[in-house]
Length: 297
Image (tube, rainbow, N blue to C red; front, side, top):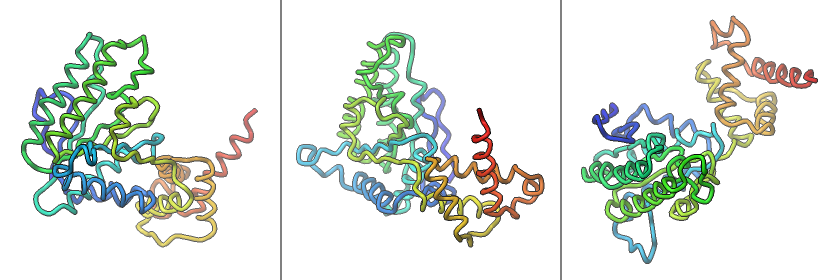
């Protein structure tokens, strides 16, 4: 399904998409996490969207909020979109609305304006969308820019406004959780220490998405090489050694995929015919990097 055009004048919305969408399947299938972690995320979203409205908030306080935390390049934002699409495929009937919030439009140098903008998002914009009645997943990407850790608020910004804006986020999440059980938030952060503790305490799940271990790196390499060569029939000791080396170096998923690109760019014949790429070409790039680092004074 095509993206829904964001109406003009609606502050803070980076995008609206109606799911499921076949083009979004890659966002789930090609993010390589432990199977049990993916299952836990999907099961939580399904439970939240289906049952949160009938569960006592005293007996089981559910805020409809999951936080994906981890370093840059680990696929958190992509995973959030894939999670929403997978939920849309699993839920019976209808469609799911995926709302992408841009947190960077809210900070302001004007006293109180950040708070008012955040309040409009949670008191007007999101309820208006939720009132359509469809299941809705709201992505709060880089949430540390929105729910700022108030204990670390910089005096160079405006600590009073930062406190008020974060207060508005907290009360807004509470309000939406109470009034709109068809809404679930997925927040991502590259810097968990920068997120306010009260926001994290509201999360029903905080899932760490770290740099991939060797088996995941292996799968990423096979997937990326297959994208260029059309084959996934790769294996052998050389691939295993390469995956182990990348994992030991702490490479994130994006860096692993870019490593394949660098191998393609290492020789013109591969740039013109990337289907000829082999594991040996990537190993050569890694070896060249190692030699270059060793040669530095």
